[in-house]
Amino acid sequence: MRRIPRTAILALCLATTATLAACSGSSNGSGTGGESGTVVLGTTDKPTSLDPAGAYDLPSWTLIYNLYQNLLKIAPGQTTPIPDAATQCDFTDPTTYKCTLKDGLKFSNGDPLTSQDVVASFQRVIKINDPAGPASLFASMKDITAPDAKTVVMTLNKPDATFPFVLTTGAGAIVDSKLFPADSKLPSEKVIGSGPYKLTKYTSGQQAVLAKNDSYVGDDKLANKGFIVQYYDQASALKLAIEQGDVDVAYRNLSPTDLTALGQESNRGVKVVEGAGSEIRYMVFQLKDKPFDNPAVRKAIAQVIDRDAIAKNVYNGQVQPLYSMIPVGLEGHTDAFKDAYGAPDVNKAKTLLQQAGVTTPLDITLWWTPSHYGPNSADEYDEIKRQLEASGLFKVTVKSTEWDQYQSDFKSGIYPAWQLGWFPDYPDPDDYSAPFLDGKGGYFHNGYINPQLTTLVGQEEGSTDASVRDKALASIQQITAQDVPMLPLWQGKQVAAVRDGVTGVQDTFDPSFTFRFWLIGKNG
Image 1 (cartoon, rainbow, N blue to C red):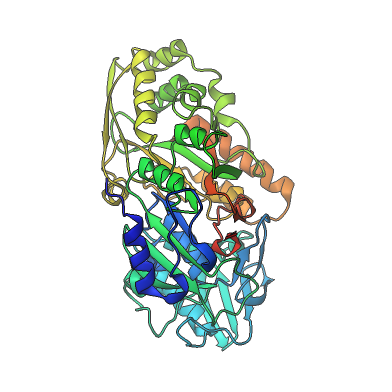
Image 2: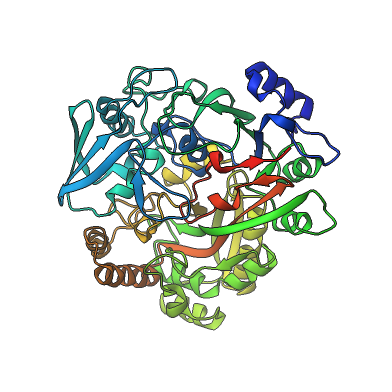
């Protein structure tokens, strides 16, 4: 663990820009920043890339949403797209989507933002096709053109009512085509956008410093004069930072015990705020490899896992058991896995394996990562190992590696079974279905292909009729529970610890999972 001292943070701020000079606080609990209005956020979530072509993870998108504009965005507390860089966007027919840009759009370096930049932005995401990037989100886009400087026309390969949502994601961030290479990523420290902030300093794994973008043309008003994101290696260091006033906000990933302690009345100067969340955790099985090529093995694990025990023993009841890949609160959710397997039952699991001719105890290996899904991931997989071995049906080996290597490995098919989480690209049940059931093995490349599900996804994507979508989504969840290519485990809220005088954090907590820096302010 390496914790950057407050003096080093202050020096970095002073070296960056005068307006960020007072960004560090005192350790006596008086809060950070003084009169400057600069907000300091601490987190253990570290970005992969600040180039939209190379990022498909929450910490990267958190910065991207604040540095770039999109054609459309999700407003705080809402779940439907509204204009951002566009004045309006509409389907002119079921497979043609047209957007008109606002007047006077500029990047933070002064370059004009035109429709050609939009075309170049989307094309480079697809062309670069970075393993850690979001190219898959443009799967339904066949072509994109710019008839004039303010008009963008996107042609789809099939009707897709969810396509406007895709334009609100990090994949839809608009970059300066004069600066960003068409066929390679731009280094994170060099990126620019047209959003409410501009990046003035970036040190990977340590710090991002953002200042107001005076060239911004948009509706979002800043409640602060600047924003600093400070990255920590350990949740324990993040907890100490919020207690001492080194950061104004601690967001992702404090442990449940840390949050409980910070929420106590005795911990003066800090409070815990919560909001709606649609973050989920699940386990994935590699269907190309033994023993998980056998559906009986996957079903037996689904029959043994006790989600209530995971929520209670690992997360102090701060998460809720999840029985579908579609989280509770989104349209069309069902408890498909609960309907299929009921309460944990070792005898039923034993019968499943016996009928399939599987000799027990069965040796299996489960993988997890310590550097992406929070400090309790180790405890979570220890609990899963305990449950599976207590059944007498499995002998479990648990392994882990750091996130950079981890995401490359699982997409290469190296792991037989592994931990993953999902944060919404957009607040719609399609985002918890289509990425996993694309007919090509899904986001996680686990070899699961079911043509029936591909058809059902097409039905729910191609319709705006709630009854049609709900019927398709119910079937998707039922079939997935029967096949068990992945196993949903739990759903979490959005939680942060904030210093006294900090405002706006709860306003940005909504199902879109967009952390909007511009809403966060502080007094004194």
